Length: 501
Image 1 (cartoon, rainbow, N blue to C red):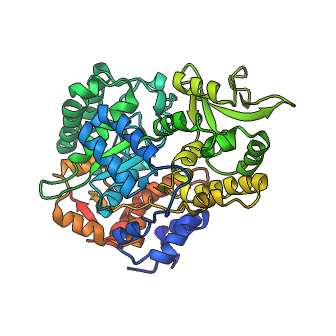
Image 2 (image 1 turned 30 degrees about the vertical axis):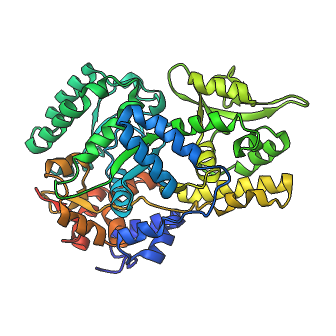
């Protein structure tokens, strides 16, 4: 391979800019560029020696959450795994996942862990129309790459939810129904009119998995996604591959269930931080400007299922209150006391923020969270903010040592190991439908995935990383996606698992 930073190509230029914008990516490449991806992933499985609060709480929550959706056996297994190996993948968004970069991050995590289950705690405060497109399916048809990329519409989007719901957050989206699925099948046929194999794979998923009785009986889309992600995952592998069971859960639902414990326990980390007003104000100051802290502690949820940013207000002598900011839902207000918070969480009008998710899972219970390139930057800052606020209020206090020991810098995204070779001889990401259409990953493919280096995997994922990171950074050169696909093929020929035309 040519040196990455020779600046002789679009690949070099984009990767340099991404490394500049994302120090987490730069650090991973500096330290691990030539390491096999699975060795790199296993190096992040660091477990803190203890936890501020018992992990058994989380195990109990997982048992109750998972059992009705995936069965008692899976619930018992994931509960046991989170105690013996307290690591979860938190890089993904909730919804049925077709975004190649996150699907393949899940693949790396799953092929590196020795556990029987693969816990994914996925963020659900995002709208259905988010980049990862939980609104429907993403397809990566090689036959349409040149045309679609030139028009800025690659991968292709197959909506399942109607347009009127596109801004509804995943955590509050209604269940998919048969009419939505019938319309989706028509859209698949139209979009894949020159790729019968891809169309057949997508329609098979819609008919056999989405229309399964248990899926259609689920209360909402979040629960449907738990079942469907496991069903899609099981189709990614050939019969000669033994993969862990995917347990893909809504992170906010886990956090809400943990808060039922924590808000009733004055010694919990959440109660200590939320209900001491000087400490609360110190925490608010510490989190200002930290990514992932665009709302304070919780999101409000309006009647349309859209999130409302909240800020802290505190009148002299009165209880602290969360109020809507920026003119949104100006009458929205929740006192920061245990009873009203629990009532609003149970009603669905309140949703834990990213900070609160990580507070009760990672910082309070010492679960190592393998995150994306943004999380691996902001989560350590959140951790420092909590410790600084606690120190200001309590001074040096050994009670909080376990919070400092939680490992918060695990980066696991921006890497792909499975590509599709286009008719123009380029490499583009392969999503789950493309992998399924090609017959799934066999044992030899898994061996190749594990051997691919961190540097190579970043190059293979550059098309999607660029679309995410470089948005709003100025116009990209005309035809950049096709150029990048061709350079990727030149750099990595024969290295990734490749789905041929």
